[in-house]
Length: 328
Image (cartoon, rainbow, N blue to C red; front, side, top):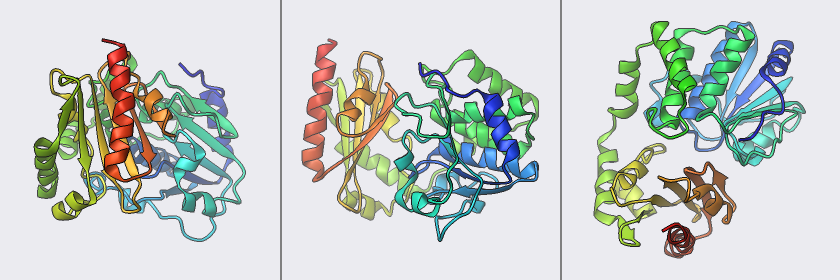
């Protein structure tokens, strides 16, 4: 476990002392990124701070139901601020090239994250790989500082925690995670509505992608490794948008014989986005992704590789299959 360099009391002091704050997360934001950014943004705004929620890529359509998500801004021009808070972002570069450019004049950064590969790039760093979601860290920060906690803030933090724990199913989900959820429910949060919107409300094009997964997935090593190559051709035919593939890898993971699953996504620039999942700590997909310049968690990680997609898949699967064999 990575031990936080700076405790919540230090972060609370810095946040209370700043007047103009930018809150940011990684490119291609997921539920933990959006929920953490907007949860902290809304709380700091309630304190009277000027807060800019900034993301390189827009909020995915599947998360647009979250309150005030339309207030996330794109990087344009230069932004002046006293402080940047980077959430759920394992390396500073992962906030995106354009975001780094518009924030070039801001010298003080808080780095709050739960990825064990985070090198501590902030002026103040709170990196705790022992928690399953950055949303949990943000919740604890708000509690520690006595910051405002409204229903809208709870919605964001609940979705952040729920999505990054696989709806409270992943091994890193601890007793405190469930206690936080219970605290939010006790305060009146409608978790049923949030779960329906998060997990049971999809456009038809997502089902076209699911059909492609089922038709095209490959099993290797006697069914212990599952993979799918998601091409630009498939994306265009389905009319896919950002966020449509979230959770599809779980379809591959649910095969009883599968130990590890991976999706190779062909991006418009020709790069290949790798998303990997493992069912066992014996097969550490973060280590494997690290061999290709990526990283993440032992059971959930990613990387970007050079194309074409067939060659990238062959290279990655060779490493993954060797790792699975090692632990037979």
